[in-house]
Length: 123
Image 1 (cartoon, rainbow, N blue to C red):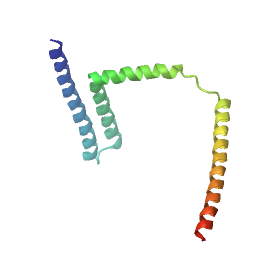
Image 2: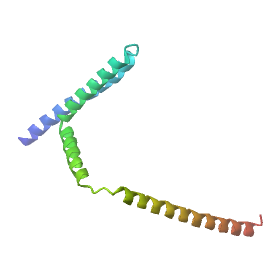
Image 3: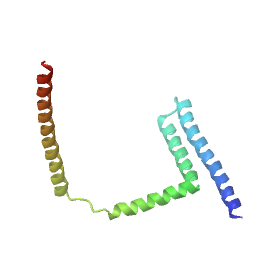
């Protein structure tokens, strides 16, 4: 019996996703078709169409999972300990110094290898 309920929910989800696709396509096509209309009116209608499509999508199983994921992500972001300005500057300077030193080492190795190749080939 649960299989029947799950398949019924999936078929409703397919219908909802189809409706979302139709709404989004109609918003895009309508925006192009009514190009001579006011930009404000077109922008508002596109935003409304996208909002309605988002509401419909959030009623599907995947939409509910996405909303749950977004909420959990927001909670996790609050737990992050962000570096202070001084820590960020120190880390940036360390990265810049390491990059400059590595660049000089690679430049020196390239110059030595170029001289070796020139010596071998006689150029």
